[in-house]
Image 1 (spheres, helix red, strand yellow):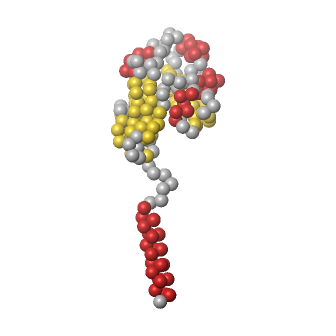
Image 2 (image 1 turned 180 degrees about the horizontal axis):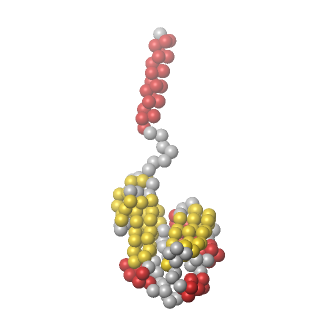
Image 3 (image 1 turned 30 degrees about the horizontal axis):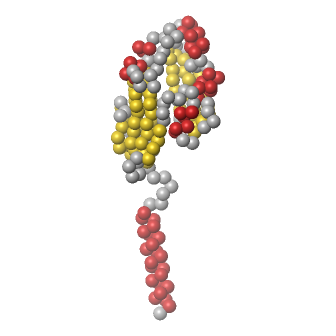
Amino acid sequence: MRITYWMKLPDVENTKVLDRIGLFNADSIRNEFTSKYTNIDDIKVYADSTDSTTHAIIELSFQNIDSLNNTRAFASSNFSLQDGASGQKVFSQFVAPIATGFGLDGSNFNVTYKYTFAGDVLTDNATSKDGRTLIWEYSLAEIGNGKNISVTFKPFKLKETPQWIYDLMGLVLLIVIIFLVRKKK
């Protein structure tokens, strides 16, 4: 999983506030995303002086998506990936309300979630799509008391031998058996 967030900080005062909060501090970020079930592969924090933005990029790896529920950052997200109807999976996540506080105005904040699914998407509640990538974009006001992200998809079959291979093998075996039986006569 790759998490990217940024914030426009036009003056030094806002930067000082964020330093106290720890949103763009690698140690604080590590604290928020660490659990015994997740690995932090990389954290990058940088400021872009051309547009007065500060960025954080976190790369995580894990065995199961619900492992993220054990991190402080995602404790209330209720990540879930369950079996659905035959051959289908149901992914869900709760987007918890986001409080700004600390002198930050929440009216200009947007949150975007992008997930790419390795399969055919059957149903979803995304706000937009780009191929197999589903996008949920909300303002803080739209999140309100929380939102649920949900997707039902049929995963691509990986490492499965196509049926025609078995059919071909059966045909070759049948021909060999017929040849051997005729040769004995």
